Image (cartoon, rainbow, N blue to C red; front, top):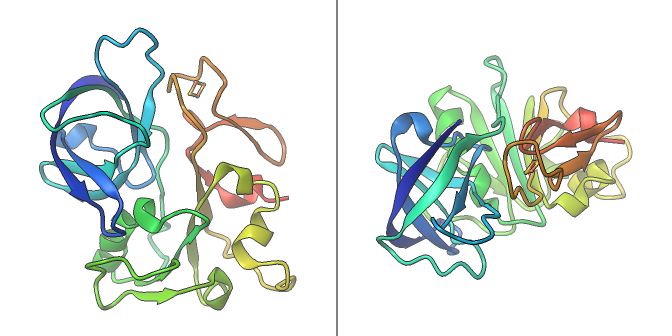
Length: 227
Ligand code: FES
C-alpha cells in the first residue's frame, strides 16, 4: 500500500448509470477488483477517508463511483492510500463464475468480468438490470439462486448489514437445500476511515472472530462469515 496523490481527470457515468470519477493512477497503485483506494481531499481538518472501489480499470487509472455528498471537481487532487486490502482471488481452475450484487449496484463486480472472460470462464452476473456495455457473452440473472448450483466460483457484493444471514440474503429464504460453491468470496464495505487497522470502525463480525475490512478484507471468504 502506498500513499500518493492522484488526480480526478474527469466526471463519468459508470456502466450502471451512476455518477463516477476517473482517477489517473500509476499501474502499481491501482486497486484490483475488490480492493479500494482510500481518499481524502488534501488539507482536510478531519481526514476520515472515503473508499473508492474500481468499477472499471484501464491503463491510465480507474473509474469509481462518486461518493455521496463529495464535492470533488475534475482537476482536484486526492490524497489516497492505495491499494487497500485483499481483492477477489478466483481459483485458477474455476470456469463458471457467478458475480452476485445483492442489494447494491453491480459496479464493483464489473472489473472481474474481463478477468473471467480472459481466463476462458463463463460469467453470469446477478443484478437488477443489465449494465451498459456488458459483453454479450455475459448472461444476467435476477436471482443468484438461478445460477448458484452451476457456479464453481461465487463473487458477491453485499451491503454490510446483509452479513448476518448472508446465505439468506444471497439465495432467499426458500432455498434451504442450495449449496454455495466452495470458492465463494464476498465484498463487504463498511466505512474505512483510517485504512490502517487503527480505528476499528471497519470491524466485521465473522463466524469465529471480528475481522477488519481494511486488513482482513474487504473481500472475505464467504464461508468465514456465513452462519
Ligand atoms: S479503517 Fe480503521 S481499522 Fe479499518
